[in-house]
Length: 231
Image 1 (cartoon, rainbow, N blue to C red):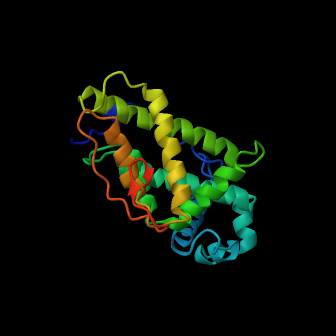
Image 2 (image 1 turned 180 degrees about the vertical axis):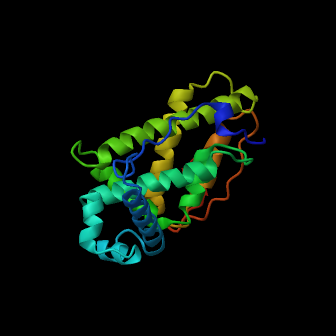
Image 3 (image 1 turned 60 degrees about the horizontal axis):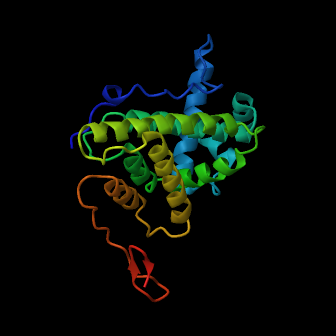
């Protein structure tokens, strides 16, 4: 299946500009904040979330730590905006692709190449359940946007006759997102898990063609892992 540009499938909900990147007269300040966010993205992706300090980010952006906090107010605000900046990049990279299957699987495949950002996401998605946390609104908005994009992929594939008729696109989209998040949690404990392959397999179970075979490693505890569990 050749992919269809995102706007031909369903108009997505765009990522809302962060509070530190809103339009205004201070272009130099906005440019500096983007520079800080890009520096933080590169450092966290390369070194890991737990191994990246505010001072390292400040040094990479040629600013003092006090200056960094002046721009973002707090570490929590900064890290939330780092994830928002990552989303902007992913939207640009995956909005128009000829690859088959759901975009969520391709994004998860990319995430396996940047484990530090997966660590950051997993940490903040837990902390963000607190309504007072800066990431709370971000994640609520993000889940709604991603669900809309996955629904678009489901409807596109259903219209092409590649998925079983009668699927509830809303329910399936939420299930795929939950599986993707859960796989990323497991992957942080076992990097041998091919997250994208598991999502592709789940997608194939929804399809009209026979489900794909997935190579599953032997269970280290002993038995052979089968599609139904451990034999």
